[in-house]
Each structure stands twice: as C-alpha cells, then as structure tokens.
Length: 278
Image 1: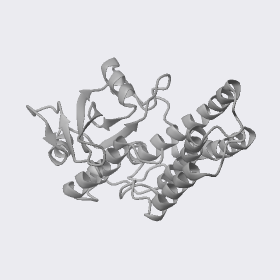
Image 2 (image 1 turned 90 degrees about the vertical axis):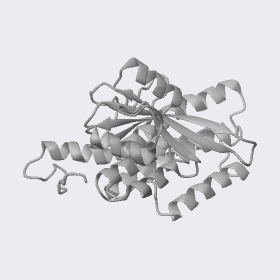
Image 3 (image 1 turned 135 degrees about the horizontal axis):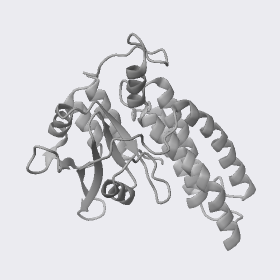
C-alpha cells in the first residue's frame, strides 16, 4: 500500500476531469504516471483500443458522471457489485474502476516487456458491463477514519507483541519512501476531493506501511510456524480496514455527488455546495 493502485489514479483524476478542474491531457498524464502507455479496450462505439483522453471523453458522452474504486481480494469483494465476469477479472487484478451514472467497469491488464532496468509497462484497461448496485462493503469517510485509528493502534500493538523488527534496512527504506511521498504533498488525490479524503488516504497508507513492514521485514521474534501464523491472523483484519479506507477515500467524490442528489436546494447533507461536474 506504499504506492497507489492504478485504479485509484484513474478514478481520482477522472473525477477531477469530469468536474472541470483539470484538462484531459493533464488527467491522462497523471493516470499514466511512470507507465509507458495506457489504452482502453472494449469501449462501446470503438472498434479497437483507444487512448485515455479519448476514452474518458467517450465515457462522459455515455453518461458517466463519476468513477469509483474497487480493491477486491479472495473472500472480500470490496467495491464490487457484479456481474460474475467483471468480478472475476477484478479479483484477478485485485483492483478495478466502476463508473457512476452509467453501468461500466474498467479492469487494468498490465503488460511488461524489456529487460530489467529498462522495463516497458503498458496497461490495457478492459471495459466491461457492470451491475448497477451499491458497491460491496465500502464505508463512509467518517467510518473509515474511526476504523483506521483503531487499526493503527492494533497494528502497533501486534508488532510489539510479536517482536517484529521495527528497524533495519527494509523498514528504514519503507519509512523513507513514506516520508518522501508525504513531503510531495499527497498528489494522489486530484483537485476536487475534500480534505478529509486526503487525510483518510494518508492514514490508510500509514497502516498499510506497518502491515508491509510486519510481513516483509524479517521474522523478528516470531520464529516458529505457529508464531508466524499468529502474526498473519492478527494483521489480516488490520490490512482489510486499510483497504476499505483507501476505497472510501478514492470514492469520496462520487459519494459527495450522491449526497447532493439526495440533498435540498443544491446543498449536500455534509454542508458542501453541490455543483454539477463539468
């Protein structure tokens, strides 16, 4: 969880584009990031793969007014709503984007080529039909924030109880990477997101960092098979909470728009002014 999922970048910057807060080219550049190229396959009205800029415009023309994120793993279909074909592909990729306003889903297929050190990464987003239904197990930002505060305490206690090493080259590198990202200004969430969403995403990344250190930074004092199993058993619910919070943060834009639709006289129940995107 130290790096953002591609689905998170697409949803965040796609929402900023729909809100008219960034240009199509800037949105596409932010989504592609360090990859070589992103294309969308299976888009209605297109005979073959198309670039992100065209794809985002086409989806808007098809009625899409927002993008949500799904981060499912076996046994936890987080953010999914069906049908089976889409859920299966999303589970295989462990991430997906689900559109709001029109029933489409996008699953990234990563294709790598070239030698180590000069890797060419191309991403093909598969566009599929989805079921129009509430996404599975996605909390509100408020719920996610409360759960994360408890999870952060739990993760710290678990690491201490199991004597997991909190220092050393791997842990230090992980902490350095986290600090560097924080200092760059949380550029993950694009313009238009509420400050609380950025706060929840940052906290989710902190919890994810602790889980990563626990799994990757040697065995610490947990040297037996039973102790290693105990570590995994204790950390799984913490990791689950962090993933739920990450999805809640990325989905905050769409949830705010949904509240606006249920609100009165252009003001959502959160008190924020409601404006149509674009």
